[in-house]
Length: 181
Image (tube, rainbow, N blue to C red):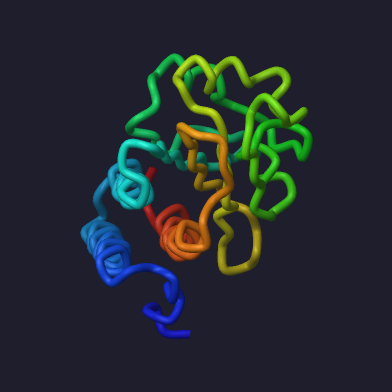
């Protein structure tokens, strides 16, 4: 499938922005820039789809199989410290569940999802009300990390967000697999 065909529901402006972010990230990878900087490029593109209403985060599985911050430029350090070294589990949060199952996980409301029972105070304290997470998978299908999007409202991701994040997660997989941490 041609890259443009992967984004049929995006407006021309959104499509151009996502494709430009993809190209910038690949260019940065070719120049061997730090992984965190490249992944931050991808989170910035995701946030631009819902300006002011979304916060994106990429978590990367480390050698012990724990989730570590790959790039979350708009989440505070105390939040990142609280979720650092989260173990992938289908019954915990959104990113941990996506990493454990290898499937996208949606949480329209932190208040209504039992997976967030021990963690919901963290995003709620930041004014974040829901989230979803797309697993980042390598060419062999193995989960390498997650691309999570937090919402400042109760909702599910749109088709446009799903398409853009799927494309950018594919770029993220390449960055994680090929870059220097």
